[in-house]
Image 1: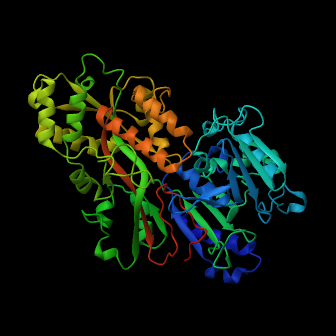
Image 2 (image 1 turned 90 degrees about the horizontal axis):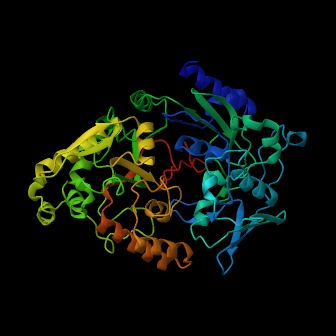
Image 3 (image 1 turned 180 degrees about the vertical axis):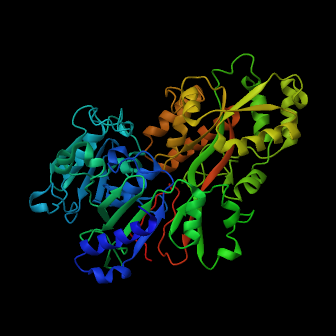
Length: 538
């Protein structure tokens, strides 16, 4: 089916299902069109692992709580909550005006009101081994062994933790924690992935897998804005054009309202070297950029480099961190999108980030030379071979860094490419001494990054096999700390240890990149790169 037929089909579908609009009014419908270059694999929240799935699930479902654009936890299905003094009991009071989408799974096809037992069921499903949710880790070892999810009445839900874990509220904003109805899961079974029933601002209309997904407005949605019901849009059309250059051309030709991300095939057609939208597009497009909770780095497996590898030497690792220009790398290869990672593993966008309290590595060849001399390898003389593993998508960044090292501090590093899946497997099996990697926060708390270096964690997430008793002590103290400011101070102390020990080469903190039509209003920007369309107008 070609794109024109898809568009016409969607308008007809929307017109047919909208009780307050006739087919003749179809051309007046506000349909938001965006592209995902990777296809959605499931619309079941239990499988909301990839960004593509997460965005789709976010349009269709709600959780107890949600994040605003400042990454603050806000009410959603829960209108308020309390946390017991021991930090282990969370009690949520639910709204009484949230309804599931109309569906044949319910009596008379009418969606019923959400009650506390739905929350208990939804959370229990995440940790049900028979479901096999990749999100089971969010509760594993964190919730009470007995009766962790309780519904004493329809309006009250209680979450019991095994031990205090301050980031739990942030975890509950993840799409894994969306509320689903048991009736629909029972009716559709595994097909719930393609016949989702939620409470979100949009509901399912049609899914042509690998081609397009059509969503329509939920006329019974509970949230409002300035007294007006949400969402403002009549529908959403998601296409799955895997060629990013083709998607870019669709945006330019006004056949898409939004594309996300940067790609070498079109970046120079949109942005100048400093990351500004080119003048030829300024009347038709808008470029939305903000901090993104994604940290790009080169990891060093401390365990496998012990012995003969130069990377076993802390001073050499520190010298490598000083030995390349991060700012110029971002300017020349990413058109200024991203910020140099000069303040540890915790990226910009998190409330605990403080580059004054956590000074990291900058481009400083004098300091690099001093460290190499102290290590006994001035200008890299006498160092044995170092090999960096990467994938083709990051070859340009790795090539830039290795050339900088050779030019500025005399260290030659070879690059070897691997397929993404193979490299991840090698990292997990301790077969990758030096590798390119990134880490995207699962939830907006620095603990999501620092957990990568807790010695009691396997790989993933501890791909570097980093082990420092002091770091572990601080990490465990932070998990039990209920005072946010004190917890942030503990995070910052951990970051300083990572800077000193240098089990990684800090590259850059990422930024989101959304390109949208100028006619689109109300698009939000947030550091978890979550697409929210309920307040968008076209």
